Length: 596
Image 1 (cartoon, rainbow, N blue to C red):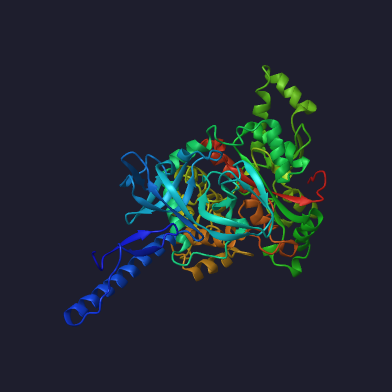
Image 2: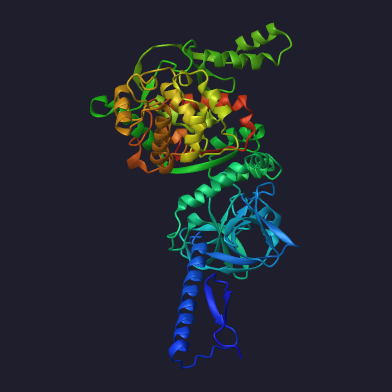
């Protein structure tokens, strides 16, 4: 019988174990024999440590659980750079090769077929993606998780997946693997868990399960970078996927969509307008955000600071500019539509509205007569006054009321501002910057797109914000002070304050200022729950005591303006047809309507 030989095996928990082949006979030895025995024991120990560290490191990617499996393809399966069949092949994994599964990636919003799921794996010292139907004999290393609030579990990762049941707060589940929904499933948490209930597997958002564990061996930025790389390499596929038959909202009947809106918590006064938008843009998603605030209380907090200028800084006051910043040659107009809606626009908007109105008439004179008889718009007020005035309570209420802007032109103030390379391109950003002074001073589209990518924020939003804040040209972007601040960060009362802020941050080039500003907005606002233009002006996501204390801009009409420039750029490049996500606040006790 052979002595002192051993082999390595892996168990389902992905830790290294060493088993002796047959038996190990250890006999007393002296001299050279003893030294040889000691040497073998040392080698044994070193191998044990090395393999243990290797598998612990490989499993560290998953902050809760992981799994193992074997390649079951005919001859081999391709380990790829991203989760698409067109992505670069890293290496061939031959049949029987063991893989460590770090996470599961879904490629469909509603399908759980194996061909619509990929695994991010470690195999033969390499990491990459393998389609799930090419892996079998899967064994999970699970951990216990506690449900933190009443929730539902689904057949797959993402809120578009079919519900299968509910879980009560405090209940425990076996967490088997991290799963990621298709990135265009708006409203979903970016990370889900594959869980085991009885003998079956389901999925639940990681935000609603506490495993009591966090990644300690690998920084979260690694996973973020990998996800970003995958998104960029498969952007064209993702863009196609956003608009195909798999889009759950596009396939909804009117009845199903109305039920969805009710389930989201949208009041009837919202649903009527959202249903009209759904008919024109069936793949858009509308997500209700329950502020938990009474409408009257929230409005009072926003308007209160506007009424006590001597005791409140402009940072938290509801100031309104009566000068139209983006349309200097156009009058500001408040008008009422034939359906009774009050709108705010420019004289150019009125002309566009009239052209659409007149197109329905074969006789221009008949169109004009119909318009004048009241079938068109009723102009309530127009003009330009070059000054700043404090907003009245009614004005603040009008611009806070989401229902006033649930239309094709203004809905973009509610757009989710996360980075999405599929449509947030240099061409779109350039369109927003084109009519401004920004390109003249070195603020290129490339700079904004790079900043958006680096800080997980929409470069379209960054460009719109810069256009709103400094697009007309000022010392904040012309470099005359040696620094740049296109977003006017820190300029609570004057542009000179923003210059001082930029100097303290070392923003000595356009690129540094855009990157620094993107970081500021991402950390201070997007990451603070203020992930729409609306929430950045009306800070209603942190409870009543915080309302009016953390606003980005003082102009209550700013969301209106930024939404307008976003719509213009999106329309030029066909982005209005993309599967966009809008997060819309809902309040308690709202009036039937608000008006100026």
